[in-house]
Length: 453
Ligand SMILES: Cc1ncc(COP(=O)(O)O)c(C=O)c1O
Image (cartoon, rainbow, N blue to C red):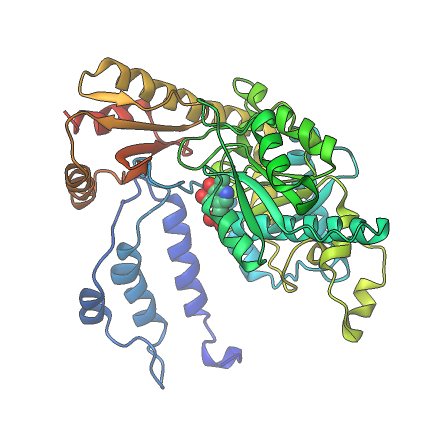
């Protein structure tokens, strides 16, 4: 199978690269959409066989049956969840990463890749105003980023309690109800308990409410506070400065989840919302969300990376040659050992375009969101639930039931016109635009809102 004799003309490779090239340069992109398993079974049948289908048939199946059954998250009118709209350079470079057999876990094996990834991390870290020593690693997503940071936080808190002989064994995390579901989910993985902090009328975590939660349960039982810089449902940025103040007072680790909204740090028009982020102990942002990188990529950054190294380094005789050096081994800063150099697509695109182009692209998406807010304001049948801070806007269609929202979503998807799903907030069904794709135009959002009349 690995012998070149089997396909001396490299037809299988060419087919793949030709398809990738066409998809990367495709304009316009089809929205496509899901199909039932019955349909796929009848259209694609059994694709894994003892003898193999050969490259022509396998590629045909992918191109004409499987790929059209997957939504294009980079379609300009895909505004659900958090879209993924990589630059062409970033998406194309992902092909290079896959083709190059780079091991991204250690300096010894992947120095060039690690060097480049670290420069991309540096840019993000500088946007947040973290100190020069800050650093981290690209992990698969926000969930793994949050888990890795929280494991470091707990390890640090318990080591401190042990050193001070307090006998404390912190097991709690403070977060609001608006924190991402991955926080509760990862707390369960860690057998930790999440204590809710009440939000203010702007839906933010604030210092006084955080203090109340900590004092109610005993500050010594907490190992981390998770603040969010851009909640998923609404794009709310917590009062990071107020929260940091309380964390510092009680000596509790502050983790800031900016998986979606962290990219806004680059945008001058909203930068003031993040005041205090420079006081965080750890911070994440997903470049596959609003920094135009392909799935799957989360930048995880620590104020003091040596604490993460102490928590995550895997010890084994066969790894001594790596772990007993002072070199920067990305694998030491998160859960997991083997790693793809998944920060390289972001690095390549940043290197090609420069950071100013990123600032401009993020500001463009904010301008489109503000246009959507103004359009909603003007229409008597629509009402915004909250003014957008970032690039997410949640609104209601007056008079619609949950079934009406779903029927509207289904109709737009059937027509391959747009993908906008309902959301819920405090028991009410609503809908929501998440604008992170610079190809989404003001005309796109206006056209979608017209369909709700
Ligand atoms: C604020 C926030 N945190 C964490 C996550 C989880 O990230 P991922 O889906 O990359 O695991 C998300 C995903 O949307 C998010 O918006």
